[in-house]
Image (tube, one colour):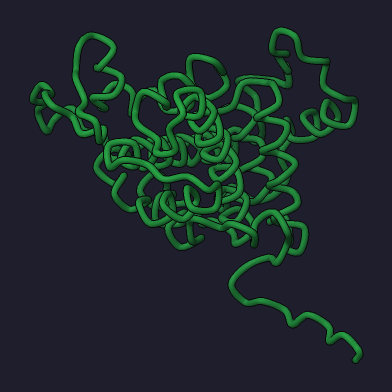
Length: 259
């Protein structure tokens, strides 16, 4: 029987990396960007942002799973998140959430019960809640889908932390992308590529790619795919995580125009 050609999809690019697990809808990404900037967000930019956020959260979840496995646990708790970030500095991607979450205040004494529920937490005034924190609940369904895809389960406190990290990271990515559009490229940060200790230097093709992102083409009203890639180089420290995020975002948008 002759195989039938794949029909084009209207809801986004059909590639292995993004279609395997696409936890967040592009419409959610567009809503987050709309909270930050009045600029139009192209379809390929939305898919690129979905891919980068997915890559970051996947790395965090996998690091937490390794920490839990060392204690012969399957369900993730906030302590696993702290262990993952402690072992990999690249995962420090949402400092605004760290200021808000009891998990990180827990370093000074907040307690959790056996299910990871906060036993005691200090009260916080509403004025300390940035918009990314207020909107974190929008990411719960996507976070649970991503956890399931990695064969993981998590206590509610851990899910809330992943929600918050996703919201803050994507909001920061939106701000950086808007800055790239306004400034006509990555002017503030140049194309310096730091290398993590013990890692090989980035390959020439990545260095060339970063140089290309430092100069922007296109109008000043639309955030395109390359603006998301440029924002990713700002938001993520140079290392394996950034390289993978850029590679997977390109794969996820290979069937869409860069604009």
